[in-house]
Amino acid sequence: MRNDEQVWRSVDERKEAYAALSDRVWGMPELCYNEHRSVAEHIAMLEAEGFAITRDVAGIPTAVMGEAGEGGPVIAILGEYDALPGLSQEAGVAEHKPLPGDGYGHGCGHNVLGSASLLAAAAVKDYLKANNLPGRVRYYGCPAEEGGAAKGFMVRGGAFDDVDIAISWHPASFSGVNEAISLANTRIDFSFTGRAAHAASSPHLGRSALDAIELMNVGVNYMREHMPSDARIHYAYLNAGGIAPNVVQSQTKVRYLIRARNLVELNALVTRVRKIADGAALMTETTVSTQVISAVSNLLGNSPLEQLMQDNFQRLGPPQFTDADKAYAAEIQKTLSEEDILSGYRRQGVTPDTGKALCELIVPPGAKGAGMNGSTDVGDVSWKVPTVQARGATYAIGTPGHSWQVVAQGKAPAAHTGMVHVAKVMAGTAVDALQNPDLIAKAKADHAARTGGKPYVSPLPADAKPALGMSLAE
Image (cartoon, rainbow, N blue to C red):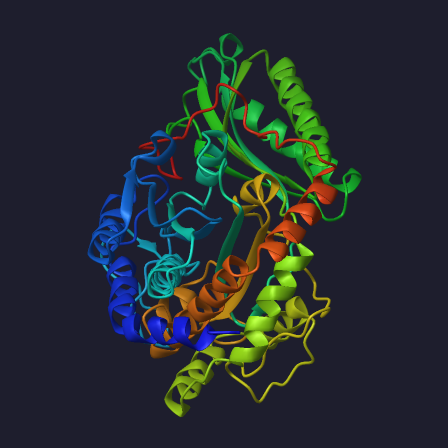
């Protein structure tokens, strides 16, 4: 007997409160490991819902876990609430209009991500109680997905040791089960130390750390021709040495983000980048030191859970957007290129329908899109426990991730509609799993087959710690 409608009604009963939570978090964008106000909002909601709360998960002040229920399987529902730098934007307008202030913005939709996940967990909590069912639901409030690998530190710290399955989602242009494709990655800071000198009267006495970084970047750029085509390498200067050209720069720092299909390929690529850095130091007679800031695993799929989530999507149907929602999304699309919009369809493996501004379908199973060449620390959870992710339509088709357009749509009614829709999918998936021990067993068997029965090994160095208090720009 299925009682999915009961848990979906519970979602609907709370939707106004959680839309308000999402909007409050949108209005207080905070970066990697500095989400103090955002986590406080989530903690207040957990308290109001009656969850048992564990703060400072894995020693991270902005990580929280709320649990409800007794005995039975443990279902984890993952949320996020960190923002991005440089994406400040007024809400509800279809033009680039930054707000005054620090320049941060929810350009990846994590304000709705965390709110929908907590909404789903609250609905499952009520379902367990109303039906006197054994089982526990946990909401994990996870900070620092954008560059901090908080879930990796949480997994390494034992936060998921007794979890049976994990459920998550991400805002997107389309609704459907997320294809488990992402890149493993690591962020490494390379610091070069040289010798300062007068650039005109005694340049021979100086050793330029800035030259070393530039040579490193040139070397890595030459390496791009000789690495796997789906690997990615990006870099950003954190310290270019100063603003005085008449001084030989003695201290510089660059952050490298290195991505590959899996940890084996990632480690090989990291070794090569490190050799290039050593070579740059050798050529300039400087020294180089490194610090690993974060590292994440690639996503691991789970067929039984993906089918279960697909069933929930199909029973629920696509999100129901209003004419006003579609009109605003069409205005957003006018700020995009034709390539942006077609790329949105290609990523999902869906036939383009350029007359549609918002998703009005469920992406069918087996649709082969261009895949995700990004990364997520959900990957580390997926290597620890069976994990499934949804994509929830919350913004106009073709909207690029990490853009002002995502921020502009973050408080729109369509974002709230998509948030509630995917919360129902996650809650229904959790309830079905709780009522079907055989399905959880199949999910675990699938997970064991994919991992070869080997225990999860964190890609983080043993001495790596969460970069608490450090923004992405430091």
